Image (spheres, rainbow, N blue to C red):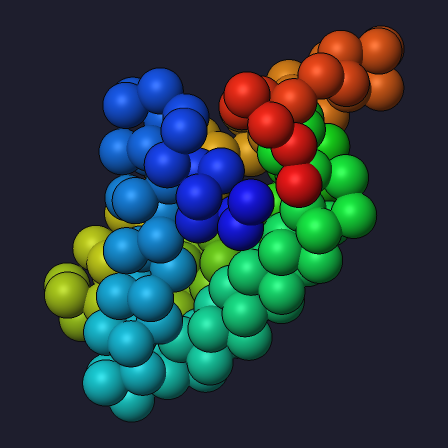
Length: 135
């Protein structure tokens, strides 16, 4: 089962959340790359998001659709969120890139909360597949 097939078996609310994150992972860096003052942030976010996507697919191929899949988010998006928060405070951006960056930051912050809970649950033994079939 592919990663996309596994996601398709998740509950509707989770699939909508994954869709939202996917849209943000693509749209946010593209919008930020348009504006000169946010171009660096757009590039950093794009690289981080590619790293997250690659890491998640590699981990999925190894362990299947389990709670440990939150780990790449924690390891990559955690530091990204800290860095982006500093950028948003330190840099003067126009309204569009600022709002896009803030929505992206809020989205990954919410994701990180879910991911932290999932990874802790996995550490404490909740290792079952989140779908009917793993990997």
